[in-house]
Image (cartoon, rainbow, N blue to C red; front, top):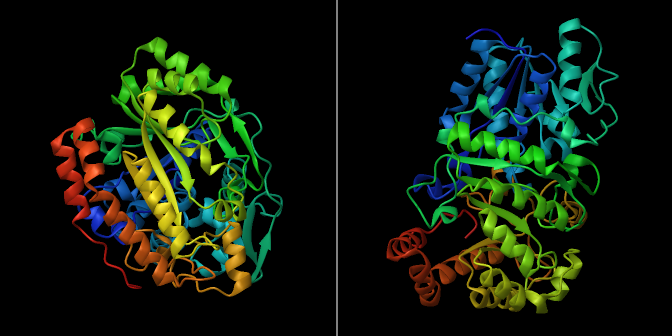
Length: 487
């Protein structure tokens, strides 16, 4: 393999982050969107680029470092942004390990850490990790300028978004501006990735459990206008707000994925896909015109959907919608700035099902005002909704979120390692509440999971909709309890 200008690296940490769930292959493995987008942008500027996805290739940290040394890039960029806010911090363990081995093997190769977590804690990241640079922000403007500077031996003081060391001191440059017009960016470089190896989550393919591969992600917007206290997404962009991509460009990307990679399973990774109705309608109409038999899922809020819109989404192949119900307590939601009326939940569930769409229901236990009674009420809500899939999370103080700032202010214990921010790992350590310990919250979360997925009403519903094989699959999944350090 010949030398390249930039290698973009996705570190692999499945075993550490998901424990036994990884062994049973219940989790999805998503293509690294940010690495693919940055690679396409660099390539459009005439740069030679490779993407190394250590997760999908199942490389060890040492193997990943060795692969990088073989192409000896001008810059090795380790990207720790996942495709949701909770998927960055926990990947710092793998990112740090790859950088450690790379620096030992080839200290002359310059390295940069980028993504959501480094953007949230750029100074700490540079101080603690074996890395030469940290990028704060998207990196669209920062990465090409850094590559130019390294090749021309220029200084780094004018490169926006860059953190670096100078005379043993950490220097921070101002953030780079956001890309105002997303249509100016090229399609992510999916051709640099082994698309056939990526797999959808088990629930996404309950209709065809043997057809989880290939799997793709697409974006139709970046950012989010809301300010939920448990979310850290704004750390990457530096502000609230949403920028849209033309549906005409999105459909070109879908055309490419379908025709070149045989993709049917797709995640729309927008933080808030169902928000601007005209945008959703236009994209759905373009997909419907193609007649594709897609199996997609997307995020929505309880207060952004209506029945007509949901029916159009279903026609386009959006078979699953993920709602962040989070809590059944208005008081808990209000404190976290999650603004919706809990009394509308039942009607939204009903209209979603009337449209023929399956529901992914997200719930969070252990938000600051939670106690056992409020968490039980939230579990009762989950049982009443009886969604086709439910995610039960513990409240985590993800760097970049208001919860992180609150935890620091209150002196609450935080995970000792970055992998402790994983929801499913051995070292998982959620936040305590004003009334409950971290162990109380974690035990309740794991209890809720077992209760939900062993509920006869749930299993009967799954059998009716997807058949007895899927019900047996769920029973098998629920029979494996996670090993926890704090319980």
